Structures are given as C-alpha cells and as structure tokens.
Length: 399
Ligand SMILES: [Ca+2]
Ligand SMILES: [Ca+2]
Ligand SMILES: [Ca+2]
Image 1 (cartoon, protein in one colour):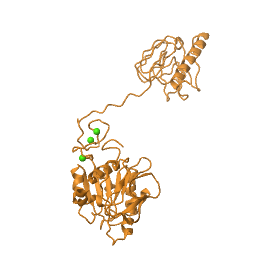
Image 2: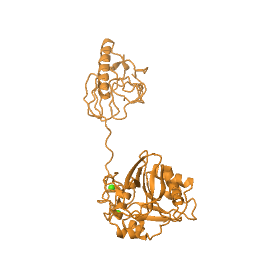
Image 3: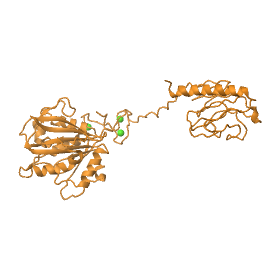
Image 4: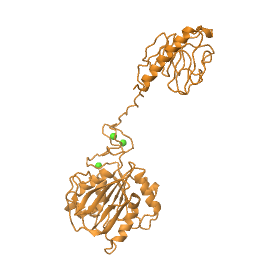
C-alpha cells in the first residue's frame, strides 16, 4: 500500500505525464483538462489577468484557477494566453480542490520554480522543466515552541510549569512528598479526640488548609466554593449534603479532576452508625460509593495491600470503630487497599472517563493527635493518600 503522500506524488506524475502528452498533441494551447468540473485557468488568476505559467496552489479551498500560492511562488507571465510553455496540470489531493494551471504547486513557499512549472513542498523539492513535481519533504507540523524555564527548581504555585519538566506546580520545598501547591478544603468538624496536629501538619507540608463547618451553614458547598480547592476532605460533617451540594462535589471530582477523601466512625450518635453513615453517604452517593453496616474493628492494625500506591509500606496504622466502605455501583474502578479480616477498610476509587479520584477510609483515627504519636506509619499513610488522590494535571507526574 502506498501512503497518501506517495499516492499523491504518483498521481501528480501520472497526471502530468498524461497531460504533457496531450499538450504535445495539441497546438500548445491550454488543453489541460479539468478535475471535478473546474476550468482551466489560463487568464484568471488573481494577478492582472495575464496568464501564469507557473503558479497556483493546491489547497482544499482553492477553486478553479483563481487561487495562487500563498507566498513565494514565482510566476512568469506572457502577453498572450497562448504562450504557455507547458500545460501540465495538477490533480489535487483533495477532490474538492481544483487547479488547472501549469504544473503543480504547493502552499509552502520557499519554492523555486522554473518556467515550466515546478513544485515543491516546504522548499526542499526538486524542480524540473517538464512539469513534473516531486515531493520529497515531510509534512509534519513544526514542533511547538519550547518551554522557557524561568525557575531552575519550581517554586511558584501559579499553574505554570516554571521549570519546564512537564509537571505544573510540582513544588515540594520540604521534600516531604506532599505538594506545596495543594489547597485542601476540610468539611465538617473534627472528631471527639484532639486533631489540631493534623491540620497543622498538613500546613507544615506546604499545603493551604481551610476547614469549613457545615452546621448552620446551609448550601455552602457550591461550585464557586469548591473552586478554591484541589482536594476536599469530608471530616465529621454535621449534616447531609443537599442534592445541589452533592452535585457540586460530583462535578468537582468527575469533571474537574479534583480529589475527595472521606472518613467515618466518629460515633457521635449514641453508638448508632446510621446517622453518620447517611451524612457521609450524601457525599459518596454520586460516585456509587457508600459506608455500610455496623461499627467494626477495635484498635486493630488493618492488613494493607503492599502493592497499592496508597498502602505500600504502610503497616502500623490504628483502626478503631470504623464502618466498611463499599462500591455499590461500579461506576469507575475501585481498589481495596486495606482489609480487616474479610471486611474492607479502605477503597481507592478512580472515577470514570479519567476524572478525579476518591479515597474512602473506614475510620477517622488517622486524624487524631494520639495516633500520630503512637503509630509509626500514619504520616506516611497520609502522604500516600494525598499523592494518590490529588489532581493529576499538576503537582507532580500522574501515577
Ligand atoms: Ca514543573
Ligand atoms: Ca508553577
Ligand atoms: Ca511539601
């Protein structure tokens, strides 16, 4: 099989040859045939009405004979229409494009031409005197302008790849594994145990963290509100999200590619798990995810999947009185990265259509100051969670 370029060249050569033969058999006038109903252009170029013997361009928009090459082709003119020296014609690549004047031509410009029509592409072509043409150059587009680095090591959170390493805002001055450019929104209150160290620690890693309580704050979760954040953590939300708020969160993740983390197991309802399940599930329902079942786990170490990016290297993390996360709709791809016996402790969910990600953890103790002291891997667990769930288009290479 020939590729289209080869076919084009062959078509041109054949056409030119055949027409040259026709021309030789005629009186030398313009006997060039027409393609697709076009008429030969012996005098109707955009020049002054004199005939060109070498001209024209083959473009999809050109019409019969009244187009000339965009730049650069030279023309020779004569006083009389009958003075054309050859009348070879072009068979355009695009059937809608017709040119009928002498020889082939191209839209590219640095061409040399001879009196008998030559042609080129990109200026690298040979010229002949018999109306044939040869395309020898490629047609690839020139590469885009190179990125110009303005920072040797990227330090600016400005949505620009300042160091031209093809990662936008991959800034981590402390080299702690958490991108400094992340804006994290925490929704809801903290749990029953002190967790001030958690937010402070996130900020110490370079992120900006804002906590927004939902109590007496109806309808606060809007697209405009969420636009402030790259990552939202559902902490102990005091009420269910409204349908409008849930829809905004859904778009935030699925359409904008941002990240969502949910926690559970606060036990503020007299050991009844249903109310907090319902509250958290109002945020998870758009993703087909949910917390289900009773409280489970009693100061146990979950079994972490050492092959998953979130749980790789993680062993010593407390789990106490959580609720099982479940993927109930299989909208996207869910991976269980931690279990306690046969029960799921954590789900990593990639939304469909290359959208954002959701991490559903079955407990809340990983935010408590006490566990930051007593368990070795809590901080690294957070680093892994944030790294996996953050938006893919900035703050480091996609995983
Ligand atoms: Ca960069
Ligand atoms: Ca930047
Ligand atoms: Ca950092």
